Every structure is written in structure tokens, then in C-alpha cells.
Image 1 (cartoon, rainbow, N blue to C red):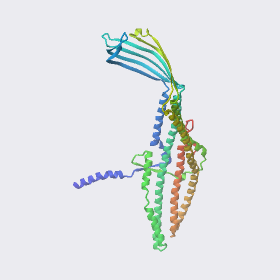
Image 2: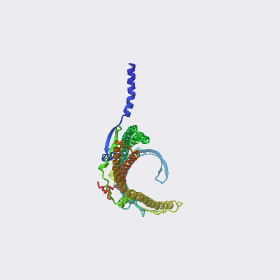
Image 3: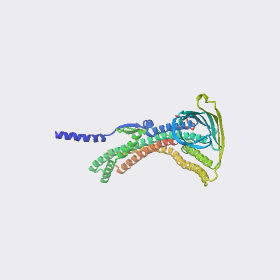
Length: 494
């Protein structure tokens, strides 16, 4: 009984570790299948949410030019205190007073986009209850309606500049959002080919190991028959041992983990990629380099710098306003009345009007405002210089990439032919081995050349796709199909 219980407990402790070490089920993906899952990736989903947030922000800005209407209601506010009260003879005395006040008002304000001024309209009713005496009297004050307009004259229209900023911000956000979605595809392609290269590296080593074992066993038999020299036999043994110790499982697992995260696979699934290179024909690409360069610079630099320029212009105008005279015009008019009962609400009606023109002239503040204005001007100069510098540096790398794409295509086709020739040569070596003739120097050289050439070939194919998806991201242009993914009028091609 004790022995059975011990085995049972041992099984309980071991079983979880067996589950953890169980091999995850492999799920195969072609490149197109992986790309179809890009909308489910973290980066793509974040870009969708960013787009929604940006749309709401612009709706908030547009709501700023719509009327702002407020209803304010104050319930009776009770107060009992000693305060200074004016007497009929003009003197003042401290009196104990008890009263309650309440009010109800509606106020509407409207920004005038053309001028940047503000138009306001208000209507309201106030009630005062005098609770000091036993008779508890009350009085009303009625604002029948008051219309007023406030405007800073000869000042910059803040709304117009804010509108320009909002419009340019929309352009930048639209471009950025599309680039982020293409960047998600770029990352998927990069992770896909990283895993493919590691998988194929393992397969190449398996083939090399099988071949090395065959050569080693063949050499052992030939050495016994004295048909091969001992140095050649030792070379065969060394090659077999070298191929036996190769292991890239760590790199494969890292590549699988990265791709699995992008594909949002559950922990029990592991990605396995499939790419049949023989089905892909690599043709010379006929894109226009100047067009791609222009799009990269426009979407990557110009539109962003246009936004920064507008923001800096706003800062310049604010700084200039601090050192310039400010002329403010305030116009208003309406009707109000006071009464004790609503039956006499309009008996004591009074038309009220006001007009004021004020001028504020800055005289001296230690040169602070002038220095702020000068700083903002210098910052604008820096911004323009930085724009040209960044574009010129980026243009060098872009032109280099675009010039290199067709070189990569040519190299892919050359390596494909080279691999075919190396395969034929290796078959000839195997054939001679079957007849007992082993040239170890030639065998080692061919095996090494084939392995290196095949991995270089796969790396070049990865470079080809990386270039394609890199410029889908940077230029919003497919250089493989020669199609625009985004046009300046903000209408997508697909």
C-alpha cells in the first residue's frame, strides 16, 4: 500500500513537468497566409485604435465652432450675517441681515471663425428673499436678454491658425496610420523569413549529416580494402563529427517565438513556415526611383515638418503679440427689469448698452518678450535647416536601397543557377563514391560551397521581400506591382 501511494505521489509531481515539456503542435503558414493575419497583430490593432482616437479629437476641434449653450440654476442660498448697510441719510451702519438668493440663467456663446471674436447671448432671472423682518419680502431681477461681442483688433486670428494646424494634423495622422499598418506587414515578413532561414539551415545540416555519414562509412570500408589513404579517411571522419555537433535549436525557438507573438498563436501552437522558392520568378522591377524618393521624403519628412512649421508660426505670432499693442473692442446691449411680482415684470424695463475700446501697450518688461520673439524666429530657422538636412541624409539611403533592389534580384537568379550547378557536381561526386573513388578535397569544398550558397540565396530572397515591404511602409507604394497605396487626395487605391 505504501509503495503504491509513493508511486501515485511521484506521478502527480512528474505529470505537470511532462505537460510543460511536451512539444507544441506545429501550425504551418505560407507567406500569404501570415500576411492575411496582419490585421490581428498588436501593431495593426493599435493603429486602428489610434485612428479612432484621432477622429474623436478632430470632432472635438470642429465642435469648438458650434454654439456653446449652458443652463445655470442655483437653488436658494441661505445666509445670515452682520454686514454694512447704507442708510437713507447716506450714513452706514452694521445690521444683522438674513436673506436667500436663487437664480436661473441660460447663456449661449459662439465663436466667429472669420474674425476670431466671440458673440454671447444671455437671459436670466434672479430672486432675493429678505428674511430679516417678519414680513419676509422678496424682489426679482430679470435679464430679458443681453447680446455682447468681444474682439481683439489687429491681432492674429488664433482660430484660423488652429484650423490650419488641425487640418495638417489630420494629414500627418492619416499618413502615419497607414504607415503603421504597412509596418505591421513589414514586421511579419521579417519574422517569417527569419524563421524560414533557421528552418532551412537545420534542413541543410541534416542533409550534410546524412551525406557525411555515408562518406564516412564508405571511407571506412575503402580504408579496410586499402583503396583510400588514412588522411582522406580522417578528413571524412572530421567532417562527419563537425556536422554531428551543429545545432541551431535556440535560434529556431527564438524565431518561432517572435513569429508566434505576431500571429497571436496560443501557447500550445508553434509556427512552421512554408516557402516554395521555385514557384517564384524574380523579374527586374521597373519602378521610377525619383517618384519613390519623392513619396518617401513627402510622407516621411515634409508633411511632418509642415505641421511643425505651423506650430512654430503660432508660437511666433504669440510672441509677437506680447510686444505689440493690444486693442480690445467690447460691445453689448439688452433689456433688464426689477419687480416684486410677475404681474409687474415689464413695468420698470430698462434698456442697457455698453461699448468699450481699450488699448494695452507693453512698455518694458526687461526685454523678456522681445527675447521670446527672437527665440521663436531662430527656432523657425533651425526647423527649416533641419528639414533640408534630414531629407538630404535620408535621400542617400533611399537611393542606395532602390538602386540595390534590382542588384539583389540579379543575384538571386545567379545563385539559383549556381545551386543547380553545385547540385549536379555533388551528384557526380556521389556517383564516383559508389565506384570507390573519393576526392575528399573536392567533396568538402562542394559541400561547403553549397551550404553557404543556399543560405546566401535565402538571405537574398529575404532582402527582396524586405525591400518590397519597407517601401510599402515608407513610400506607401508597392514597387513590385508599381501601384500607389495612398494618394494625396486621401482616397486609398485599395
